[in-house]
Each structure stands twice: as structure tokens, then as C-alpha cells.
Length: 217
Image (cartoon, rainbow, N blue to C red; front, side, top):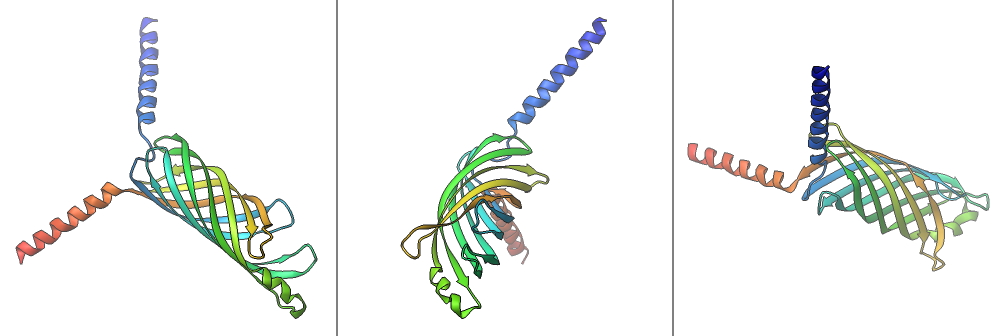
């Protein structure tokens, strides 16, 4: 009986030790750089904008849990029906700097919150000459974004990202600051993560190779 208790206690201690060692490992470290690309299907809450966007992002980690993120997206041309029943083709671009806070940062997983504000541009095009006035609304966008998501590391420098950002866009071209769209965009993509010290190591190895090559010659 005592042996069973001792074995059970040993297993529990081993499990706790393993959990502590896993908790001490973090997915991100200060100085990490992350580059990613994602597909973003857009779902509008109202009768405004919807479509599919491609988003590229670049992040720099100031600490294990805090990063400065920049993302740029391009919305593929979409045919939409406006409130007045007229069809128009819309294309949009945007750039949003944001701040990201990781509430969980373990060896394989992370959970984050982020928020940001950015600018963009939108283009309207119609095939009906009677609707040509709609194209006058083409121009600038003011963008607000906030959301949350998770990251999963499946290889040494590669990870998957699942995000659920909310975006609010204003058309600021005509001076009326009219709302263009507001909605949730599910985010699914892949990231490459590396640290600035890794770049230094690569530079040092490259210099050593050059020296060896130079000495041989």
C-alpha cells in the first residue's frame, strides 16, 4: 500500500514538475519578429460591406507579452448592392498599426487581445452611366479595429493564427464621415517567427564562412 502511495506521489510530483517546466517556456520572447499572411472573410452586421480580404502583418515584441503590430489588407473587388438597390463594384485597401497583449504565452499556445486605428482607401466603380455619381464617394477611409485570437506553434519557426477582429470603417472622403461598414472578420493565417539575435548569429556565420573562403584563396 505504501509503495502504491509513493508511486502515486512520485507521478504527481513528476506531472507538476513537467507542467512547471512547460509554463516556464514561452512562445514569444523580447526581440521576436513575426511576419504573417492571412485570409479574412468579411461578415457585415448591417447592409454594408462584405467580401474577402488578404492581410499581411509584421510584429515586433517589446516583451514576452506585448507587441507592436502593423497589418495591411487588400479587399478583392466585390459586387455589392447598395441601399438604393444599385449595384456597384467596390475595392478597398487599408493599413492598421495596433498593439497586441498576450494574456497567455505558453510554449505552444498564446491568447491575445489587440486594438488599433488606421487609414485606407476605397474605390467605387459602376457600369451604368446613370450611377456615375456613386464613384464620387471613392477616396479615404478611417479604420478602427479590436479583437482577440490564438496562436499555435507547429514547427520551430512556424505557427497558425486564428483571430476574431471587429472592424469599423468610416468614409472620410466627402466630409460627412459616413459609416461604410462594421462587422466581425474571422482571421486564419500562418506566421513565421524569428528573433533578432538569430539574425545576428546568421550574420556571424556568414562572416566566418567568408573568412574561411578568403583564407583558402
